[in-house]
Image (tube, rainbow, N blue to C red; front, side, top):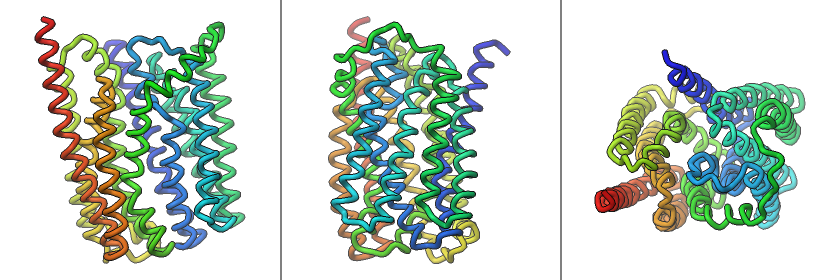
Length: 417
C-alpha cells in the first residue's frame, strides 16, 4: 500500500469515527435527558439543541468547506481564526436576544444559552480542523472529535445523573470542549502549523464575511428548513410532542451523517479536479457518492419501517409504535436531502453560491408557511408532511440548478480548449 493510500485510509477511518460519534451526540444526549429528566425537559432540550444548531451556522459562517477549498490561498489561517472569534461571539449574543424575545422561563433560557455556547466552542474548533485538513491531518480532527464526543457524553451523563439539572450538565460539556480545543487542537497540533509571524489582515477578515455570505446564508437557511417543524410545534403544541418529534427525527441523522462522512475525504480531490477542469472525473465521483447515499438511505428507510418504532421505544422508554409512518416518511425524505447536500457541496466547490441562496429562499418560504399551517391543523402528522414536502421541493430545485451549472461549466471549458 502506498503512503498516499495509507494517509487516505487513516484520514477516512478517524474522520468516520469522529464525525459519526459527534453526529450521534445529540441522539445520546436526548436519550440521557429523557431517561433522567423526563419527557417535558427532553422537549425543552430538543428545541434548544435545534436552535443551537441553527446559530452554529453563524459561528461557522463559511465553514471548513470554503477554508479547505480555498484555491488561491490568499486568506491566512490567522485571518480565519479572528473571523471565527467574531462569529462565535455574535452567535452567543443572538441567542441571548432570541430567548428574551421568546420570553422563556429562566431555566429554559439557561439551557438555550448554554447549548449555544457549547456549539460556539465547536464552531471555533472547526477552524482548527480546517487547518488540519489542509495539511493532510484530517485524522487528527477525527481523533479530537472522538475525544470530545465520548468525553462529552460521559461527563454530561454523570453530572445529570447526580444533579438532575441540565444547567450543570450543559456547563460541564462546555468546559470539556474548551480544554480539548486549547490543549489538543491548538497546542498539540495547530500551533506547529500556523504562521504566527504573519500579521492579521483586517481586509481578509472582513473579506470572509463578504465573499462567503451566501455560503453562510445557505447553511443557515438549510438548518432552519430542517428544523422549521420544530418551531411550529414550539408555537402550537406541547413540550412532550416536541420530544416525540425529536425522537422520530433523530434516526434521519444517520443518512445526513453517512452523506457527510463519505464526502469529506473527497473534498481535496474534488478541488483538484475542478482546478484541472476535469469535469468528467468530478461528476463521476459525485455520481458514485449520490448512489451510495441512495442505497444507504433505502436500507435505513426499510429498517425504520420494520423495526424503527420498536427500537426507539426501547431506547427512549416511550411508546412510539403509533408513529411508524411518520418515521418512515421522514427517513425517505432525508434521502432527497442527502442528494441535495451533495449538490450543495459540489456547487460550493465551484463557488456557485448565489444560485443556492435563491434555492434556499424558496425552500424557506415553503418550510415557514407549510410547517405552521400543517402543524396547526394536523399536529405531529403535519410536521411530518411539512418535512417531506420541503425536502422534496429542495431536491427538485437543487437537481435542476446543478445540471444547469455543470452544463455551463462544460461549455466554457470546451470553448477554452
